[in-house]
Length: 294
Image (cartoon, rainbow, N blue to C red):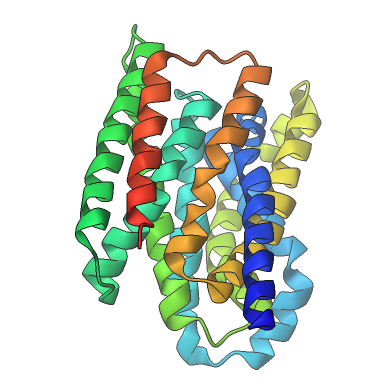
């Protein structure tokens, strides 16, 4: 009983730390995009994270059975590689606060994909929660659209919605197929296939030229490095641990807190939030609350 209570307290502690880390990731991406293009930011993020975890990767390669590799690759693409790119592309047109708010859809897609692909059971409250969440997403995308009235690029917010679909898939894959592996094994190995692709891109891009000739490039790289080491490599270790301590839905509920951190950073950076943004996040949070209702 005492052990169960301690595990629950530990799980909530991890939840709070993850909220701070991931809530700050949107402003870090924004800083990186000042100098680098979206693909470069995503590639640098994943590559640096993979290098940071490389000591654990070498050990894990000897310990993990080959049968897990397809699931590790799928988790790497869905949980890291593709979302990193989608968020960067979206944030060339959508402010970091809106990106953080739309990220709140993750628990809804965790439930939807868990039900469709992994045979999770749903209740009527969860169905209503999903519908509410989508209504909130429409409000937020509309708010982003009004932020850029001249070209309508607020629709780039749909890329963030797609990224949350990926997150929902990765959470379910981790829980269903990778539960027997350690946290370090999952996170060090899942980045390898994605990093290999991104390294090839970096070797053929103009990253070195940008670093040599563009003012502020090294500072931008430092922001991406922080994002990679803390926001990807280290935080993923905590997230996998959280999934194992609880369940996919609870773990994805970190998105309750991420928008608060993202909004605070956005306000400090001079971003403007409207009543429509507030309505959108309120509706999404109501949907997430229903999804987690027991």
